[in-house]
Length: 323
Picture 1 (spheres, rainbow, N blue to C red):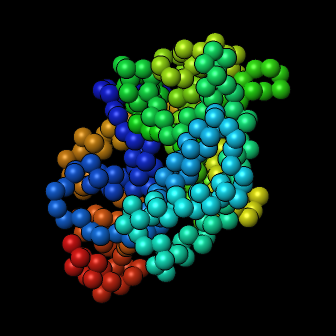
Picture 2: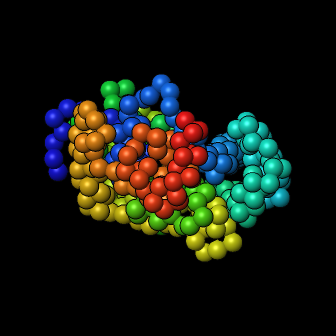
């Protein structure tokens, strides 16, 4: 593993952007005041609304579990559907618009199934033996105490991220294990063993089990937690009627450390790109996302060449006129 010459702090999504296209990451870092192209944000906006509703619902169910009793399954489904509709309006999306409705239809089975398993899952989390609080957190910002406000993969390598759901579960042997859970709205299943965001969160768990510093996680507790095996799970909402709805894997500490080394190597390259003065000095990876989904197409020569070649000069001219 290389050692950064100075600290680099990025987000988990920054890492994925860089891996997809170094040129896009370069332009993203420039923070231009003007000149961005409009992009098709429908899928992302609907996904964000559904995600916000799920997390809100989970917090409400946790509160209900503490006070008792939990609502019936059908009541939980109705409540979650209402929260989804409300979250869409907050995103300035019309829930009955055809394009929004089509996207929601793809997710409906998964949303209903999530409302059901959330009820069952609440009873599976461990409770703090002193306070009685459930040891599950929804959307916690991950840090290592006041001095390190991010996930520290290694000294000088910081990644800012939040988990969707993170919790501690009792094991059959009498100990405990940690589960990192993430909700996805993509059309295809996401394997948690290769998802950057989930892996970064698992590396945070590993660091905290080895050296507890976070004030709300393990540092204030006396629990026997397995430090060598961490569970990762994706909930694939678009596949709600299939076996791929929930994909869970267990990674060992050694496997996670190999991922850590791979990610810090990528971050070394990101640091070089951050210091680069011109887009001409970075590598572009033109692909099918350039045409509708890149806000920097008008600034990227390889991207424009790709769109011209695969979509035609008229399509490129029309896209650039939107700048």
